[in-house]
Amino acid sequence: MKYLCSVFFDEKNLDALSSKESEALDSESLAYDDVLRKGGHFLAAQALQPVEAATTIRVRGGKVTVTDGPFAETHEQIGGFILIEARDLNEAIQLASRIPAIRLGGIEVRPIKELTRSDGSQ
Image 1 (tube, rainbow, N blue to C red):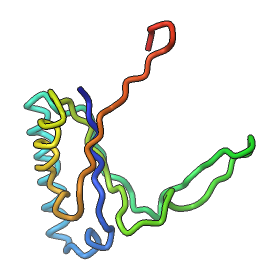
Image 2 (image 1 turned 90 degrees about the vertical axis):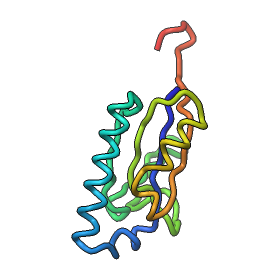
Image 3 (image 1 turned 180 degrees about the vertical axis):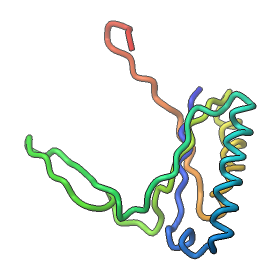
């Protein structure tokens, strides 16, 4: 089963890291991606630009509106994601608990809902 591991943290915590600490976190994160890859769990992963780079779009009454910034005002922001394959939620939680950026905030683990067409095709 596929699980999305959304990495969230207060960007102030990331910004507070020294260059050396930030580089170490990046290296540790890439190394953990390799561990997941070697274990057959890794599907995709990306870090995100800061929340100031976000754009939110909505359609209401047939009109598209575009707003600078994230979809919600929060103290923590989505900073990246890892898409994994795991036997079950317990294994997904175990794998997500070792994502290095968890030290800055948390990880939301959510099963992927596979969509299919009514005719059975994807």
